[in-house]
Amino acid sequence: MAHNLHYNERTGKHSFFSVKEKPWHGLGQIVQDYPTSREAIRFAGLDYTVEKRKLFTYDSENQNANPDTGILIPEIHVPDYYATLRTDTEQVLGVVGKEYQVVQNEDAFSFFDAIVGGSDSIQYETAGALGKGERIFITAKLPAYIKVGSDDLIEQYLFLTTSHDGYGSITAAFTPVRIVCNNTLNAALKNCSNSVKIRHTANAKERLEGAHKVMGISYRLSEYLGDAFNHWAKVRITDGQVRRLIQLAMVPNKEVFQKLQSGSAGEFSAHYTNVCEAAFEYAMSNPSQQLETTKGTVFGAYNAITGYFQNVRTYKDDEVKLKSLLFGGTAQVRTERAFRLCEDFARKGDSALMLN
Image (cartoon, rainbow, N blue to C red; front, top):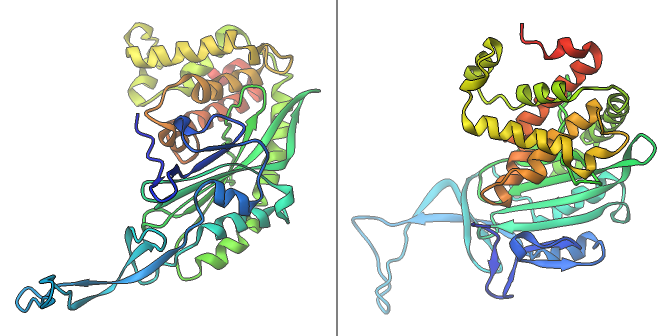
C-alpha cells in the first residue's frame, strides 16, 4: 500500500516521527520522549523553508538559446502566478496566485505552542510530510483530559494539516482520543465545529498566530463532551437497540434508509451488512466494551462505532484513514450521525431509533 511519505534523499530518511508508537508503515523515526517543537520539526524532517518564485515561459516565435549550451532561455514572465519551491532541494511543490502567502512549517508548530501558552504544556505525538513536502501534518496532545466515570480518561488532541502547493486551507481540528482503545471521536454539535480553516491569503500568518483564540472551542467542546459522555455512561441500552443504532449510523444512502423503513432486512448489500456486523461484534466483544462506563450503555454504543472506524475498518493507507476520521470523510460522517443518535436515545429512549 502506498504511504506517500516524503523520502529525503539528502538525509536518507522519511519525513515522519512518532512518539513510542510504531512509525507510519514502519517508516520514519520513533522517539521515546515528547519533543519540543524545535526537536519535532527536526525529527519529522520539516526543517525546510518554502519560497514563492516567479514563473516564466518561452516565446514560441523568437526562442533564444544560450549560444554555448543551446539551452532555451525563458523570456516571458507569467503574471499573477508563482511557483512554490523548497529551498533545500529546489523542488517545485505547486503553482499559486499572487495573493497566496507561504506559511512556513515552523509557524504551524508555533501555532500549537501558542494555544496553551507555551511549548512545555503541549506534547507532540506525530508529524510528517507527504509527497515532495507539499503537505505536512502534526498531531499534538493537550494537557487536559475528559473523565468519564471514575477511571475512564479520554485524551484531547489537536491535528493540523497545511499545504505548500496551493490546494487546501490550513486546517486545525480538535478531537478527543480514548486511552483504552485509542478511538478517535468526532462530535456533531449545534452551532459548533471542531475545526478551524484558514486560507493562505495575504494575512494567513497573522490569522494563524491568532487562531488559538478561536480554538478555545476545544475547551468548550471538551466540557460539553464530558457532560454528555458521563450521562450516556448511565443510560442503559439493550443489545438489540445497539444493533439498531449501528444500522442507522452506518446507513450509506437514502435507498438503504428506505429499506430500513420498510423492514427489507434481506435486501441490504453485503458490504453494508458486513460493516454493521463488524461494528456490532466490536460492541459485544472488544475488551474496551467491558468497562463499567461502556458495557450495556449508550456511551459504549457510541464507543463501538468510533472503535470500528479506528481499529477494525481497513483503509488504503494511513493518509486515507486520517482524512476519513478527521476531515469530512466517511468515518467522520458516520460517527457524527452516531453522536446525534446517542444524544437522541439518551433523551427519548427507544423512540429515537424508530424510523416512522
